[in-house]
Image (cartoon, rainbow, N blue to C red):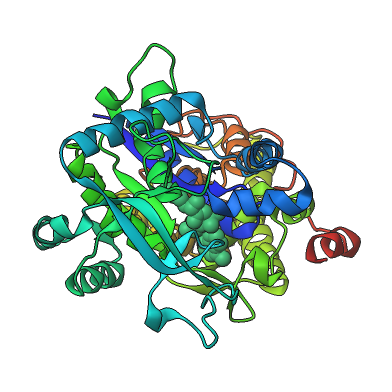
Length: 509
Ligand code: MSP
């Protein structure tokens, strides 16, 4: 069976920002790590194009919703490429194949008796595309998120019998303690279910920008049902002539932030049960990137433009910073200053310098050939089972913990250079063997940490491993002592060069 990982599909009513880049990068790190293990991976991302949020954003721009979607979807595709995401497909919910597959699945759900026609009355926020309960409303019947004054709407809707899944969902959470990770998010999901589930709107009668309800053309499906199903539909048409659901369904992990927990942890499994499809193995729910304590979001205007950061510092630096700074699973603040500090102290000094010093010493003292030696004992204990520990963290999607594990070794290697002072050994008569062992240990340590860092910083690590004369990037190679020495080292341009204030300024602006 393959390994299937997804990101949420992003709304095309606004431009992509750092928050979107964050989820896509994390899912990509996971996908790359799993490929290093030799897994058959499918990584999906895409855009959510239907529904009121997009229809409303198009109106004042004087374009149709489809035109707005066609204008913005390529920006999300460009972001995925720019962060070096290795997604195997990019799903757009306006794709014809997605539309017909949604109709097929939801017709099945209707035929199985999970749908009925009813009347909905409630406070509706068109920006959230969601009804609000009385106690969620701010004073003056305002949306708690958008602060819009809401109108009470009454309309005929098809309903999905979510209430009928109360028990099956409780059982699911009782039986599968790792269905939602991390654990505190699982508890949130359970608390929500315990409040008692009520049926939810499956269709909208007023809107036309959506997937038509096949048994009643006066309605389109409520955008969340259309959107959630992308994870399934994409596999049916991503490779023409091939049904990838056979290889990849069910998903191994859906990655998302906590804003959309309820839809994924409650409605999605219920919908899959109704459609008689297997449930995903895990949802991983990460926190928010904050700036000055607030969630970074387009409507608040406190966004960092990921493109500008990458133009100045490179893609790998952004990938590294986001995975390192904010513990995956928790909220965390990001800032231009924090970024620059980690870039200089960790990437340029700790890793970049370690690499250039090691290569320079091998060139100078050993004519550019990595000496063969026994793995130095001072390092073997630190490297013992590191690949297994990293694997363990990735099994539970603890991406930051995996990175921290590796970075401890980067620091250990820097300490080792200081302790052993190879430049002194090079001057001493009779210290040849000792110097061989130290240089071998450094090259080997650098090789192992680099293989483990590959999913995080693929471009830089490729360059470094090429310079070390090592070709194999598989996880099996991340074993200290597996390298034999004898490789000829090459040139390496600085991995993380100094950035001029002018270039950095453009990124911070
Ligand atoms: N279209 C829905 C998702 C449908 S999935 C079937 C949607 N789109 S969205 O454009 O609003 O994207 C929300 C997702 O973007 C979050 O769940 C998260 O993955 C990412 N993020 C957006 N802003 C973010 C932060 N400030 N911090 C962390 N993640 C952020 O919801």
